Image 1: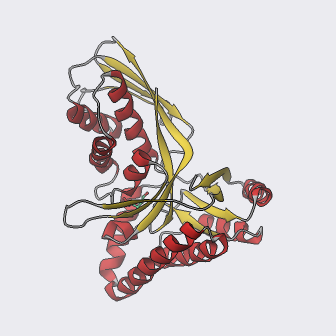
Image 2: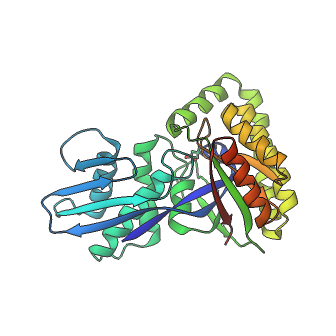
Image 3: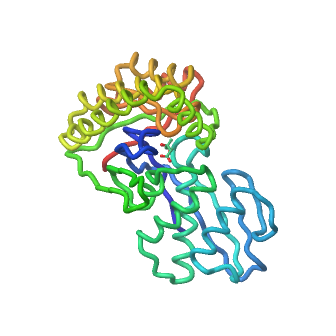
Length: 308
Ligand code: MEV
């Protein structure tokens, strides 16, 4: 059995698609894949989405398309096996569930068939298969899910190697994830941002400039473990995402709730327009308080750490 981890984008979602820096961390939520050999054909039971497919039956389901890419990349099309998928990551919620799914499948095939795939190759497969979920992924989700930890990421817009740096923090940050439970479509959110950018190029140029500066400042403060400053920068990043138009009334309410409970900062994470946000807490007690406030408002909550 192999796991693929979810992620939190701390800084720079959407902007990373345009080659600006993003900072993301793996989190404890995961997708799990277990392979049972000697079955007829290749079947996949995904308990997270409740999908059960016999691969190669030619339908256009995203799970089928994902499997086609993974099987082609690993040259396992002729094998017989069944994959059982489960886990605890909310799907289509901005926490990198698609990348986690692909990574868990690729790692499980690697284990079972002794493919000796490097992390670099797992990451390449995950990036290719991520295109099934949205047509222009930056690569940040699959990179974090594959390599784990806290990652600085810059997409190479000319098709060359992306910039990836693993950041070490003095102490981990205590966060609370708030889940609107509104499922979003990352592809649609990315398309929406592109359309806005085309309509208002001047405004976006300005926002992009600020986003870049913010990410560089955040990198310094994260490494230094300056939670207070990181919190302020998270709030500024949320302001930029709001201007871009990917926040929502539920995400804003979650951010306000967290800040009202004393959080150091709060912002949406991932594509936005629903999905999840997270808040940075001062200590474990406050973390629990924020989680309780989220639940009181009817939202989901999950307590975790980043930078461990
Ligand atoms: C999705 O988790 C993050 C986005 O920036 C899209 C991407 O980077 O591929 C919205």
